[in-house]
Length: 517
Image 1 (cartoon, one colour):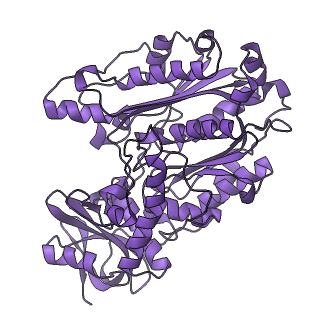
Image 2 (cartoon, rainbow, N blue to C red; image 1 turned 30 degrees about the vertical axis):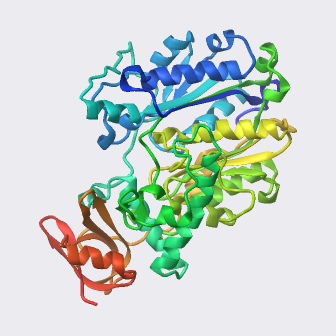
């Protein structure tokens, strides 16, 4: 927080949290995303111990953008809300001055909390709600059953969208099949394997061990959507029940998006918490926070196995709080895929088998990956953990797009010694924007080697090879597809193809790579 001297009575504090998970309601009785959000908001108000008047006093509502409004492949056939925060405010009896519908990205819950806390500290808001929900489980069931639902609602005006939603991939990337998380994160995974000098089998086992610890946490969480104790081998081995999705990822190493989940967080000033007689034991404070992006398109980055933004964001977060990593008792590291965790741990300086654990929920593949809203759950769960262990500190990291957009928050029941002041995010962003970009060409030709790669799978098996390579002549990076014949795709998966030599050419408007080694 930055612009003026801050009144300690304006210290922002989280006072109410709530989470909902529905794994079994039939379509005819299941709740829409709006209904899930309204229930989560009411439960968060109840959690605070305050009266129902708390909801009526909310002056800012930030709704995390739904997947249906983020990615074309998730567009709902059942309509949309013209102004989600306006519709939600009507349901809960609030008349907020600010109605925000965030851009897409798993970083946005933490960004929304950062912003809400800053506005409260500056006296621009007194009581804010951050909330989100997904009902993709119900939507999928309705589609399969041929049931029509109506989740649409008009509004008198559009919400504030903070500049609007921007796609995380370029047209050139999309032309080669790189237009979703499952296309991008396997490229990071292979690059990580190469940087760590592991064989295919060694890295498969390492991924399984990493996520088996997440699954164990989920098995003890009554809100998790998958509560089995999966072994490392079960997680990483392709089977009929656990098929490959994007090599080397199986179903159990990917975020589980088809869930019905909602979470809400209520933040207010210290003086407002006193006004509503919210008990001290309910209050959790944001001690440090930061946010920044790596270079926007993955093909621009220096490599596929690091993230300067994660390193600087977490460092800034700890510095703002005056804490070290050793003083953090609990973590929730964003976990849509193993590579997201591996890169974050590497940049933070956290061991992947740290005895403190890397998640309080169980992670996106096992707890559930409700679109852009997972981190709202992570923060809510962290609040509950800290309330149960007063005086301890918990760190939450958030990741949007393709290891692109990052945010972090450090939380505790201990009130800050002085109101926290965060540096303007533009300062760090400017620093990161100056980092070199990889030389890149959209029209490669000639001999080349593979920098990283993946094979996309459908229910029928392998169907698309994606290669990021470097030209032998000048080191320029390029992206290409391979031949889609079974022999080529199977060979990419059965042998270590990092560094494999070949020739790249253009064919029918896209680049094609053929091995020569």
